[in-house]
Image (tube, rainbow, N blue to C red; front, top):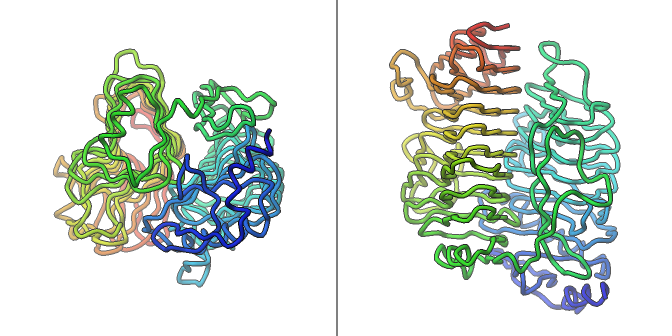
Length: 586
């Protein structure tokens, strides 16, 4: 029965000479698609010709290796089994196994390199290796995952060592979760990283801000600040792993939805019965960018469907509006929702127990108020937003892309797991008065938790945290590169030059953050910055392990938090605070 189903999926692939156009580049490639998921999803089976699979993987990577602002999107899936192929993962590509466990799907080699871009020293530069994903697969050799923001490696097993840089070139990642590495992890030149609920033999490398949350303590470094840049937190207080597509020989395709976990450590799939449930594909509306609109998507939601977005660019003239608690919006292959009429991309109304995951949100050329709004609900059950990315500008467009805010979280008990919120610092129509956006993320809900929150280059505050009982573990931020003069970047109180990256509201009485890196890069002009964080000076608001770094230019940064911390005057300087609470710091 299983072989018969595989043959249905791969029958066209077995016919030599069949060609299909893929994306805008019209590359020639064998057809490994299904009608269910469309032309941007490739599904390989153990019965397929190995050379044919390798040819398809090579051609996808050839189109996507350097495609930083391309509109092509791909998801590459492997049925359970073993594959003697080598896969490189490029821009806007998701590679994943379809088994219940990552060890059900074995691939000889999977890597991401940065050969396409070099730094001034001629080293492979991974600082722009964004927008890609590896999930639910066993890699049977040493693996290089040289990436930066907007990437995820989840629920994998690496048989060997995992290297997070390409031959010690620059890198600015990143996120690894729910995974087992049989050897060591080498972070090398990575500026920062969050490793959450993983197991590895040891961790090599450190730079500014390396955070280990809920990792198997046998491999976690013993050193910590100020001697080393490691922040280790024993347990993950609350998390739900991201859902993923699976295939079963009896039931066909479905989406596995993991359960919530409390106080968890190490990866969660060690037993043969993972904790969670499989939702049948019939529960989902399978969206395709060439036919679906905001109207068709909202109609599906009104019929009680969850939505599985196949890879593509969804140009929306109205918000996708979620009104039903328990709704899942899940993207495949970096599926992208793009505002076209000054609208939001997603709005939730009086709904909780939500999952929004695997989606990239693009601002459009008509300014919107915000791209995503998670609306408030009384006594809200926890909701998950995972691998959710936001982009303001950089894409090819007739005029600049704009919004006022990327995401506002009014919903209590929301858990964020790997977010990159980015006002583009390079690409098309990029500049201080062009791709404008005041704030990256605004959090008004109570008891909101953020793991791996990365927010960069916005015109004012990068992050505004107004809710009570918040937790942020691993934060990365660069303030804007392109401020034209200091008169256009003055704190609202009129007394300080520059907006802090992270602002906790003055009336907040409880907040906790650990492992934060905030960086100043004066690329275009000499702009002073007063402090990296602003928080209330009271007991109950606690910041643990924060570092500031001065990357380029003059005249620097005066403080780290409020009035505390050392002045940064010269390129390359850093300043650290180990603990800050109630105005006291060390």
